[in-house]
Length: 131
Image 1 (tube, rainbow, N blue to C red):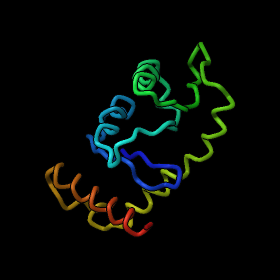
Image 2: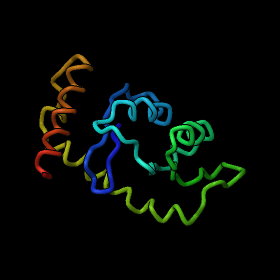
Image 3: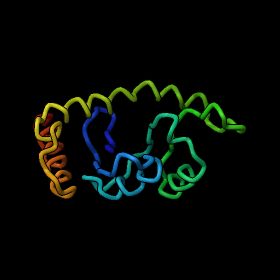
């Protein structure tokens, strides 16, 4: 899981097992961010639409922008904020930059801590190239 800024540069990264849902992991990843300041807005897809995550983001002072699920009875997302959802392609670009690193694609490391270290190293390389 990764958090990127408005230019697609990494702000925070984290890893978890493949079976876990991403919404509960957001706060943990934000605690491992590379910078001191929290982002003002966080854009996610439909799986980030939950009342619990919205409450956690409000406590941190972050505006959560995610389209409502089809099954949701109360449509609580402001449609004007959803115009920012079209910028979600920037996180996909970050993942494509990370997939240029063969060591991350093949995942030679057996320990999760070693793999996370290489992911952070790849993020540092991305940030270094953008300077």
